[in-house]
Length: 381
Image (cartoon, rainbow, N blue to C red; front, top):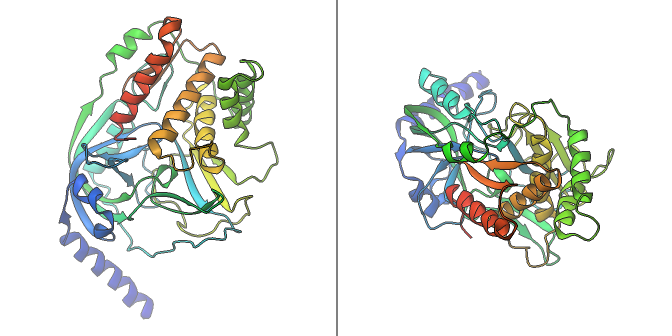
């Protein structure tokens, strides 16, 4: 009888929250995410998926991360989401405090609108060349869901720069707000223009072979050695590959193959295994989007992010998402150069590498492309 009453209470509570949805803009929420924590909100906005992002975009809200992470309730099995993702979890031996806040359950309305929304966001961009995290559309919609918010997202370090804790959501726990989707309506596709990138990469064809993680990791180590000993670019690639450890290592990096678009299972709980620093780095790779050499590029990108958090370079202890993503994409482009890849394009049609670029212009063209891409994803220094 008690279980039945509890079940009825949850249903009633959820219905009431849905009826009392608070209208808010992305900037309203990002200015004070904690004040919206636990509330059901209604947002009219634009949603985008890319390489390691799944977010409701915000305009220039004056934040380092101008967007709200989007998540489906556990068990949704939707198609849209990031191509790769690094999520932090306390290891069994984590010495810090674990945030185990209980949150009201969210039940997703899998309506015709939701199915359209999910399909539009999951549609890949058409490009014969390698285009990492390139999706055909952004989608504007009215979204209703539970808002989870924290005062400050990111990792917190002790006096030795070791990770002592973290807060936040999504990729690297870098987002201060997350919307767990309850319903969606007013769905409209916003096609992304890749015409310039397609024209510039004409004639380049990416491999469509089915890779595996071990081969991709080996390829990353090989790419590092291609530059020769002591080369800074090669050293950065090797640092990224080394973040995954050697076969059989228990270094806290866990690889899974899925679309990481749901609230993490057992969020906030400690993992079943120890880690050298008490932190588990759960890496998810969507193999439907990482055929051929693309998985090796994703390994380098994610490995660079892990290394930036676990063993920050001197002066990089307080780097934000912009700085870490900039370094990760630069290193990824170096791995493309090492393997003699003709071109490398990322979401939005920004070309990070093209063999036709004049030698004298390559650094500037890469820098311009990275800044344009990261600004387009709402990241600021």
